[in-house]
Length: 94
Image (cartoon, rainbow, N blue to C red; front, side, top):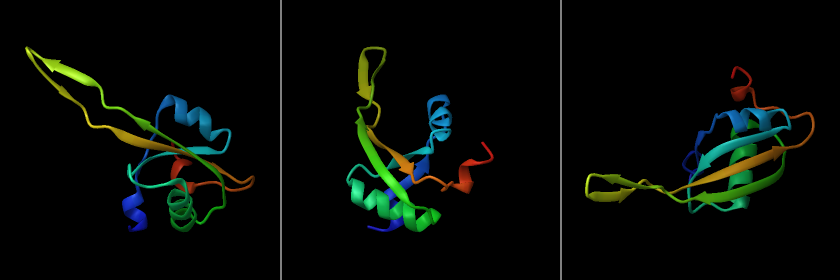
């Protein structure tokens, strides 16, 4: 799996901007990726040292349209904690 396939996009919400003050960054990742692969991808793409990786799966919400119902897609989120002194410049302008 390519590094750019593991990390799909950064997640920027109110909760994640508060986590950035604690040197934690959130990413939408491939559901098949494990913590070790996510750690390698972040370290190589952003040239930083990773302290910890926490992941959890978000189940897609059930939605109704009239009498039909469907489900939004499920996805996986990774919260990456960096070592002290490391920053990801991509998020600094947010």
